[in-house]
Amino acid sequence: MQSSSHLSDLATGFDTSEANWTVGDVMALMEAWYPAATAQSWDRVGLIVGDPAAPVRSILLALDPTAAIADQAVAGPSGDGQPYDMVITHHPLLLRGASFLPVTDPKGGVVTTLIRSGIALFNAHTNADMACDGVATALADLIGLRDTAPLEPCGTDAEGHDIGLGRVGTVDETTLGTFADHVASVLPAGPSGLFVGGDERASVRRVAVLGGAGDSALEAARAARV
Image: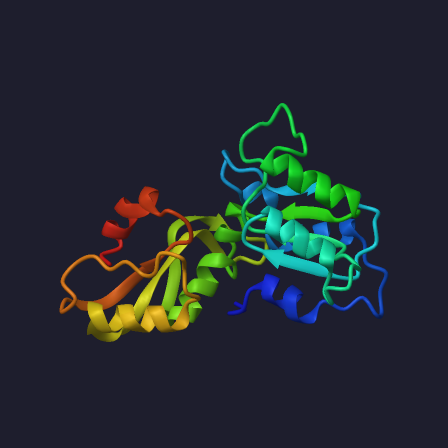
């Protein structure tokens, strides 16, 4: 199993010098890595805006398809007004249906900005969470979990790797406070910081991780004895 995220490979190693890539080619690659069929039933994943036949020379990766990200995509890799050709986000732009997308609407503004500049928008959400080397594995690797397995298994991928939401694994025994300090040191700082619940002197050995809210996986975490 690869320990690094495929998306990080795209971010650091995307090269079109020897091939004429298109939006459709990138979509096919994403489908191979993160099949849409593995996304949860309520989710919306795939191409949101763009032409599958359009050429791709540069890709911007982001968590959310916000107005700021759309503006960054228009500014381009060098900030010189040569736009990115494609934006790939984790979260979908239109998780719930929208009847109107005027430019005055935040989401409509994103759509308008991207279409005007010919920029494709694609997202991989819970299908990227499920993958054997997806979001949860990247999080587990950053924290340093060993002997990991899906927290909520849901089958195997085409190569026989276990897939599912979250990951559960082990760390060298430590205290909750020390472990929290470690997590804070290896993850990017968030706007609200790191919240810790429980006795900071409590022993920590087995840990579960899950991108997103995680409340739906609490029973699975209890069953995994974390």
